[in-house]
Amino acid sequence: MKINARGTNQQASAPYNRRVVLDLIRQQGAMSRKDIVDSVSLSPQTVTNITNDLEAIGLIVSRRLKADKVRGQPPIEFMLNPGAGGAIGISLENGKASAALVSLVGEVLQRRHVEVDTADPQRVLLAMVDLVRELRRGAQERIWGIGVALPGPLVATEVSFIGPTSLEGWSDLSVIDDLRHATGLPVFYSVDSVAGALGETLFGVAKSLDNFFYLHMGMGLGGVLVDNRSAYRGASGNATEIGHIPVVKGGRECYCGNAGCLERYVSLYSLAEALGVDNGGIHECPISQWIEQADQPAFAAWCEQAAACLRDAVCTIENMLDPHTIVIGGSAPKALVAHLVQLAQPLARSVRGGVAGAAQRIMLSEHEQDSSILGAAVLPLYDMLSPRLDVLQSERRSEVDAAELLGQQRLAGGL
Image (cartoon, rainbow, N blue to C red; front, side):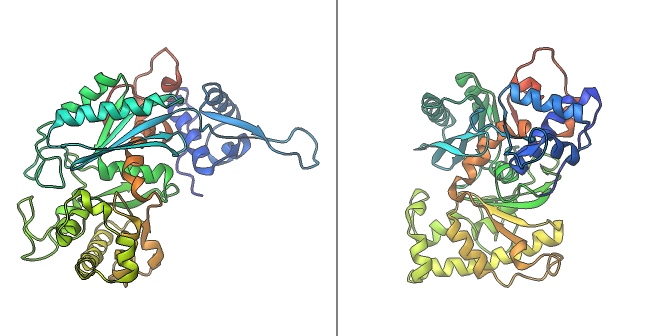
């Protein structure tokens, strides 16, 4: 598996070094001190100090390997401690709020769902507070924070907060601060596509990749380039709106004011439109049965058109960005996404063709419809579990608890 970071033996970089070691252990599953020293540019003493610190605060646990009839003590290996705590992830889609308690190793421990009028931020706030209260009531783990994934864009533009796939009626994100005050927990937020991409980076099919493009298919369609394990956000944080790229000349009018946008053809909302069902009802449709029996003409027609648009989108993404692969996740059923990818074959010729095989050009998230929730829960954990060079410039404080040992920011913020 690919090693993504190197440490530095400068004393001032201790928080970054802890992230490097913790992230390495997470990627490999279990590692001895010698393996860690061989993988990163840190001295044996530095690695010993870091593993001692991480074990003392309960983030990693150790076990001695079985002896192989050799002299001396068998080596000790370290792994993430599943009981070291977790985070609550909240995913907001039009008309629905979903939440889950997720462990430090990416295991979904509890889930909750509630229908809510997402056009009313105050009702959404009350729903989120109730969801957090329910999840905390049954949790024995330490809660590191709350992550909220929202449909974008989050910075006001001409297409902000417009249409059935966005949180229409929201004029700002003050509800995030209100949630932090109401729960007393750090709260992080992000566009759902960025959250999903970070979830795949930590706990998904992209955990060994430095570079990939993440396509988030839910009621809408978003996407984000991940490079050096960081999401590219653009000049104003809106670099995720691939769904509003026009792909069909003279096509369907889009709620963003343009016509023929990709999201109007490849999204659960567009499928609901084609089937004549409401947004909530799309998740109740027997999609797997329709795929197997091919007896639903409206569904089959939508799939054919959606697959053609997806084929063009893949070619555009590859020629523009040359990503290692395209990962598709989101709240759309995996069976549906797999069917569209199959219909889109053969993929169009691009700079990735001949470099990556057809199976490597597109990967599907393994989290099924938990992708959005897991991505949200990753937001509070990402600073802890993923090394970031900007930690080297962060302020140091004298008090030491688990968060400070890792250089984790305690204030709410967007990722």
